[in-house]
Image 1 (cartoon, rainbow, N blue to C red):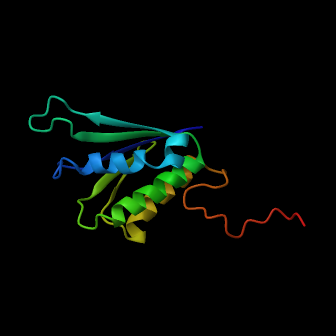
Image 2 (image 1 turned 120 degrees about the horizontal axis):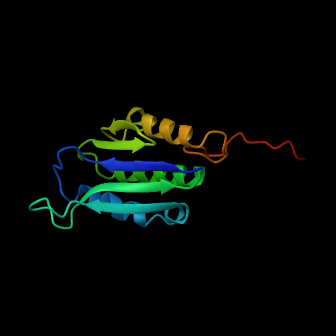
Length: 134
């Protein structure tokens, strides 16, 4: 099972915003190990040479989903004045406006739904897991 994720910024107010996010995600070793991260550029758009328009990810498991959630949360907290980011997970789109828990809840829920029943999914810190072994 895989999940497809795309990340965009409406209106492209800051051409380097997605370039920054792509670099942040690409430096996350756990995410890179369990996902394919691809920057998409619109070379025909004037004045936007080398600017990323969409980040596409294919997540291979819930570890990748959790890594994406943590990396995005960290990136967003580092940029509190950034514009809203639209994220689509398996065809379901929503907008993340800031780094508040409420804003990030939709991303976490969508990533959990993408990998139902897998342990270690998005936002799962493993607390409370007990396999009963003594």
